[in-house]
Every structure is written in C-alpha cells, then in structure tokens.
Amino acid sequence: MNRAVLVMAALLAIALPLSLLAGRVWIDPATTPNAALILGELRLPRAVLAIVVGAGLGSAGAAMQGYLRNPLADPGLFGIAPGAALGAVTALFFGFTASAWLLPLFALVGAGGAMALLALIAGRTGGIALFTLAGLMVASLAGALTALAISMSPNAFAMSEIVLWLNGALTDRSWREVWLAGPMVLLGMVLLMRAGAGLDALTLGEPVARSLGVDTNRLLWLLILGVGLTVGAGVAVAGIIGFVGLIVPHLVRPLTDRRPSQLILPSALAGALLVLVADSVVRILPLVTELRLGIALSLLGAPFFLWLLLRMRKGLA
Amino acid sequence: MMLEARDLVLEDRLAHVSLSLRPGEITAICGPNGAGKSSLLEALAGLLDVDSGAIGLGDRDLVSYQPRERAQAIGYLPQEHTVSWDVPVRRLVELGRMPHGDKRTEPVEAALRALDVEHLADRRAQSLSGGETARVLLARVLAGEPQWILADEPLAALDIGHQLALLKHLRRAADSGIGVVLVLHDLSHAMNHADRVIVLDEGTLAADDEPHRALAAEVVERVWQTQVEWIERGGRMALMPL
Image 1 (cartoon, chains in turn blue, brown):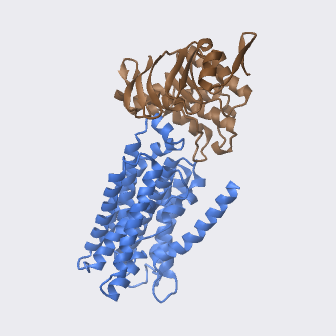
Image 2 (image 1 turned 30 degrees about the vertical axis):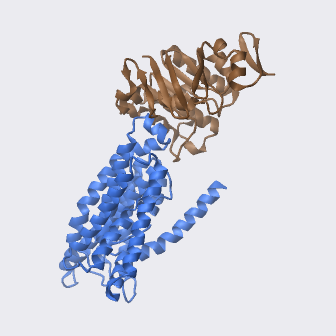
Image 3 (image 1 turned 135 degrees about the vertical axis):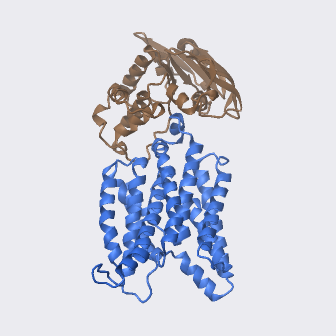
C-alpha cells in the first residue's frame, strides 16, 4: 500500500457522493421527489460504471507504459479498443440493437478478435518493439474497417448512431452494464497486477528481466488478457474514451517510487476518479445536448499530451 | 558447479565453440569487434536459443532449469545500461533478489557496500553518472548471490580507479568460490586480472589458456591484426602497439 493509493482512494471517496448529487438536476435527498429511485437506478449505476471503466483504462495504461517502457504508451496501442469499437459498430451497422445485450456482446467479440490476433502474433515476433508494431497494425486495420462501416452505413440514422457511439458516453446506463463490465474489469486488473513484478524487472531491459527469471511470454499473455479484459469491457459499455490510460499514470507517478508495479492500483483509482469527475462535469455543463464524455476527455487530454511532449523535449535538450 | 559450452553453433556468430569454465576463477572472453563475445556470454547465461549444441551447468543441461532456478545460479549483466524508470537505487538493487522471491535486506546492503554505492541508495537511478550506474547495476547482480557472474564489458563506463576497484571486488567474489566470466576489451586488464582467457575470432575459439599464452603477442597479431608487444614492469603487463 503506497501513498498514491491512499490519496486516490480518499479523493474517490469524496468525489463519489458529490457526483451522485450532481447533474442537470441537483438532488437533495431530503426534498427531491423520487430521490431514492433517481439515485439508486440512474445516478448510482452511472457513477459505478464510470469507476469501473476508468479503473480499467487507468490500470491498463499504467501496465502498458511499464511494459513498453515508454511514458507515451496508451492502452489503445495494442488494437484492443479499436477491435472492440469495430465489434460495436458492426452491431450498429446491421441494426442489431433489439436487445440491450447485443451491442456490448459484439464489442466484446471484437475485443476478443483483436486479442486472438495479438496472441497469434505473440511469440512469433520475438521482441517488444515488433510486437507493438503488430499491435498498431491490428489497431489500424480495425480503424479502417470502422471507417468503412461508417462510409457504407445503410442510412443517415445508422451513421449518426455509430459516430455518436464512437465518442463514448455513460448516458442512460444501468446496473446491467455494471454487471457486464465490472467482473471483467476486475479480473483484468488482477491479471495486470500479477504482471507487476515482471514489469519492474523490465525496467532494466528485456535481457536482464529474462536473466532474473521473468518468463517474458507469460508476461505478454498477462498483458494481452489484462488489457483485453479491462479495455475491451470498458469500450463495450461506454464506447471509446481516450486519453485516460495515457494521462493517469503521469498524474500518479510522482506520488510513487516510479516502479511500474507500484503504479497499477493507484492508476486504477485515479482513472476511476478522472472518469467519474469528467462524467459529472458533462452532466452539469449547461449545454442543449449533453457533451459526450469521450469528447470531453479528449478535449482535456490533447492539450495535456502536448504539454507532456514539450516538457519531455525540454528534459532531453 | 562447472559451466560448459558443448559445440555451440549460432548462425553467423558462433561456430562449434566448446569450453568448460571452473568456479572460483575469473575467465576473460576477448576478441575483436563482432567476434561473438557477447553472443557467447548470452548463450552461457541461458538467454540465447542456439542453433545446435548445449550449455551445461553442473551435471544438467541449462535448458532443463526452470527460469527462476537458472536465475538463482547465474547473474547476468549486459553491456547496455538500461534503466527505463527513475526508480530509487535501492529498489533497483533489490531486483537482484527476484529469483529468490524473498525480501532479504542483508544481501542487498552487502552488495551496496561492496561496490561502494551505499551513499547512493536513496538517490534516483537516472540522476547517477555513467560510472555510478555501472556499479549500481553490478550491485544488483551481486545482491542475487549467484554462483556465476556473467558480465559484458563491466569496466567500459568506469574510470581507471573504479575499474581496478571493481576488478578487486570480482577477484574477492572468485576467491569465495563464485565463477566470474567477463567480456573484456582491455587486453591488459585481461592479462593482469584473469585466471584464464578465451579468445574468439569470427565465432571460433582462437585460444583458451592461461593469460600469457592466450594473449601472447603472436596471438594478438593474428586475431586483432595489430602488431603489439607486451611490456612487463613489477609483475604487471602492459600492451604496447607497435
């Protein structure tokens, strides 16, 4: 248990009750009519889902940065999020939205397909850099197929559905999505945390990690499964929510001793906090239609990424 | 436990190399650039898949060892000094305990002391100089208390004072029964500090003998294609290019 875990857990404990009260309508549990219903069936599942999705993205980002030994790595690099998005877009394209389960299930199949492709590639490339390039190709292929689906959508309604969904949101989600994503994200986080010791050893490079007894194939499998479950489940219920996995480890790292293993749990908590707060903010903003969460986080993320690049360049100069 | 290479073949790098290393000795692997020194060291550490041949540790093939079991026996230090994250020095050295899966602090403290980096223990790794980093990374190997230390150019980033201090420490390790295998570019250091020298030339064994025979002027001339003369003073040898 480190300082970062305590800080993030405390902030999350403060943010959760506030986010339940916040929204287009501020709730006063004592006076608002149907307060219990609104809290229990609308706001609480949405807040819990924000925590689940954010925790998955944060922990996956921390693990990916540790694995690739690169602070600019993002869980999207392996192509799992684009794969899940492609699955969901396929469901929307064919209009398979009769049951609320279908779209997330298609997304999970898409994430599983990307993971299977990565598993086929793993062990044949024989190196982290080549494997990452292969992951980028998976991402690029899924992205291209998604664009194809958009350009060939049968009607304008399907197209706007797809585009909106791709922008990520937690609007109108229920306990069903929580039960769908929660266990998978939790299992994924457990796998990523089991990778922690191996990620620490990778700090000294792949040959040293292997000389220390790290089974690099097993490590890669933990990463593929862990990132697949956390990110795949997140995309399945919330669409594409960018930048959380990239930013959060940077916010948390100064609070730790910078070992990758020490970063995974606090990054999960910080990711949960970030998505929870961002989702509360998009609810409060006085706009005609609610700002999509994915857009809001990218609006926040892009300038941060730019600042990070400039700061790193200064560090190198 | 003996560490043996039996007829190692690795495309373009090693051609039928056989040798047998004894614990309690410092063995230097020398040879021109591209001779296969690092490949041989990696193969001996069990980190390289060879095309044919085998490595033996004790009376077993190294491939039959579990990764952790092998890591307990062999500590490996590569030439590149990679430290990807700015972690505290003590945490880096503690990684040496990973194969044992314990958190014993005595070996870690002993390793920090042995390499004279105790005062750096709470510093961040990326704030160290090249020489300090080299010592810290070797301390990481020592913290694992391996029976064999395999180091690729451990003296490369060090000044002469620290080079000699490190060699003295490696001698102490060898005297305590540890097998020490070093890839060395500096032939004078190999001549003066190794018990045995292996000379590689284009992936084949050019010499495997006591230093003054393995590094005799005519061997150096043949393998490095450079005219040299050894000069002796006070029991120490220095290499003089002609």
